[in-house]
Image (cartoon, rainbow, N blue to C red; front, side, top):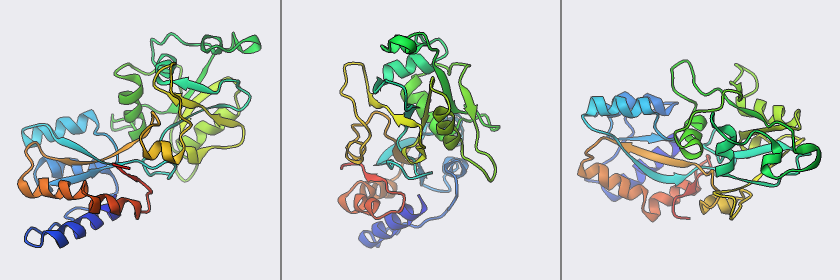
Length: 277
């Protein structure tokens, strides 16, 4: 989000020369902003993902109150590493064409009720086949989840734990990313299901259309559906502040949400979408 933060600070300063904004901390990871934000060393921090529970607790401890998280953009459709939408892949031979978040929850949750493809309506040779699950390692050495796992725990599992039969993948140093490994595993196993990004598709897999419930509507994840936030697993970009943002901080966020601030999003290399498409 470095490019966007620079564009927003320049645009805000041009409109508010008496209250200039400046980038006081540049970092590779959102986690690097946690302590400076909690200590008040920065007033606004970019988070290209939801806060981890440990980060929220840390900021609350340092700042004396819970941080505020303001949605400012919609994540990309398929920019690798760009807070992209999440797609559900199955093997190309799988007859299933669509699935709901409610069904996915029962597939991936530890106490979930769906374990075979027949329970999803498939018949014949598919009816008794066990569903093979593939996903990212749910906790890193820090104790925090990867950003995508954190998102799915909130959006998909809704507080439930992951099923312990999920095949877990981690990024290989100098090699394949976990999302690449997941799609390759799905392509190699007719009974598999896994989550990844649209840009990581490989021959042998197909994306399922997604709906909130079995009643639909279902969305394939087109650019328009994601930009309009119709696709169920669309991501969000945030700005975080302390528990009591001052007037200049509120003015900066108002600028980011204004037509001028939202206009900067379309020009950014990450290919995020304006929040109000």
